[in-house]
Image 1 (cartoon, rainbow, N blue to C red):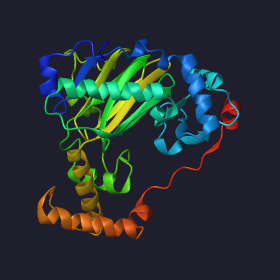
Image 2: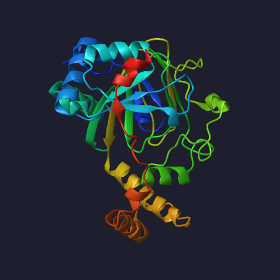
Image 3: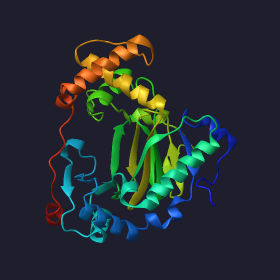
Length: 312
């Protein structure tokens, strides 16, 4: 059976999860990611009600607050991909492993190979994946994720900057508040991105080239801040998300600390012992009383994709 990774070295097993790494893969050769098949998947999403996010980004470098979310409506998947190719749109097909068994088989194969190649790697669970189809010049603002993540480039090229998990790039307060309340990490008032940060981004090739090409993937440590910008062509990317017992413990501790911070406390970081379990009790009460939901951002009201047709 063909392996997923093409250039795995012994050093990657030691670096995996500790530093950002760049690897070559074979996914871009898989018919699951052809435009024709993805157009069929989009139609299936629309027909069967799978979860997706379709966004219009507005002019280049416009603030995220100006983005609008849409429903696919009556637009066929093939036409939508063409719209994305020529307009400032992107669609994320969430949980695509639930929409077609081929993606679930691929997802399982990826992590089976990772576990085989990285002795002692914690077992992963709650694994899921998504396909992101995005327009030329699309960007993902500076942010971090609260689960384990991988990014696989299938078609087109993009720039990927991955930053250290320490101040000034990231603070524990921001980890706690974003994890607990889904507070925006893109707000300069709370977590500023500065262009000079890029000098400290991971340099995979040793020459400052941040381009991710088809057949390449990147993996970074938990919570590592990153941002992404497409080059001048349609981009198709595959992402995976996972948890381990340690990541779950980290999320629970951050959620509890975020709740305490919202009341003006400055809690110490603990992920074990009596203090940790006491914080879990606080988090459980906050969830049961609806406090978490009241503080979390409200979703944007989606509108019809007919407005996108009117834009062109």
